[in-house]
Length: 464
Image (cartoon, rainbow, N blue to C red; front, side, top):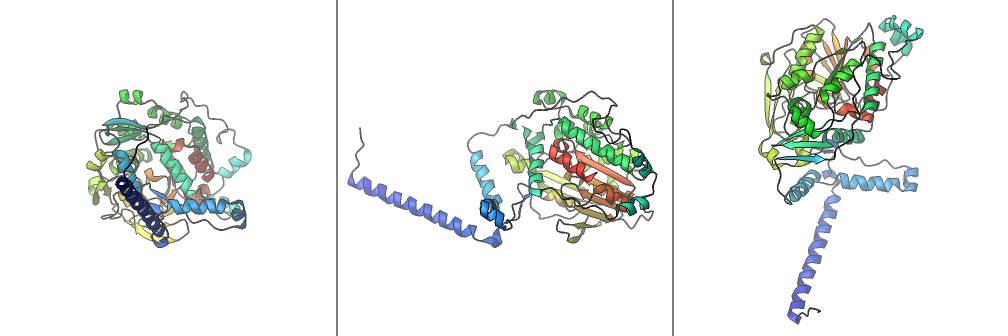
């Protein structure tokens, strides 16, 4: 039966319909005007911790095939003014749909490869098998002779920063276990990535044999260090202890540093953040002590260093989950300053040079950026010169962001500390080590992140 409306009801409906249309048009007009405010467009998302899409470069081919306009559209949407605030508001609205559980899983479970039994048989195509006469003779040459033959340090094409950032977020947040305001990444072993990483590190050790010591540290994520065996069994994924032992067993000529056993022994301490995927500097310090033991040097006590304390840190897990429980119980960043120097220099991707601090005062920075107190965050190249040491000692740390909290702890042991973030590197690492006659090459990586094939490919390319 068709509903009949009175003339007065129809007039009211027409009035509200007109108001709705006007409001819609007003919102669209305001949105269009705001979208045209190019000077307000952000370049970095603090919430997602990534660089946003840059305005595309015009080419005739991209114009003709239409891809230029697609890229402009992506840039327009990805860099919309007040983007992070709008995304946060959207997540809070979605959070009203239901009650937030104290314990839950977020994301989809991935497929993991079986971790092989530990053997001394190297993975296929290992660079350490059957050295040729030419390779053997190269090892007997001096650093100067090698540098002379190779000429300038080879430049490498850095990976796409946006794609690499997205890959990192995928690796550390593809399947999260959330419990009482803390999040834990589930780890999945990938054989192809492991083999590529192992071969690359073995090749580096072989190439640098007799000239540079190669150290490898694989850091477990929160779940591997903090959760009980029962919880880990229920979560599925791969055993991080077994995976790290497998990686280490396959390395030749490489000095490995214990990580997971020590971190598990300190699991009741504040060694990982609750709202972020990184470890704290206290966690890094316990592994640093093991590094010192392996190297045969005396660690510098934390209490002998000056420090900063930054409260209300809400990291990557909070950015993804927008958890009210996390917001009520934010993290605190404790950052310890080296004794010898707190000065450093870093270079951006465009080659620009900046003077900075090894540990910076980030008071007043965005709540999601406080981990950047360590070594200016992630940069292609950083150099720290310690005037308190004059013996010519040096190391190069090849890392991702897990290494940021670790680097300041090394400063009091070397005259020069070089730092390369492989996600943005523009030079061949082995050439750089030879050119600068570096004593120690230190690779420090979170085990979850090197499970990515693109990450393993990138490290392999830098260690050619």
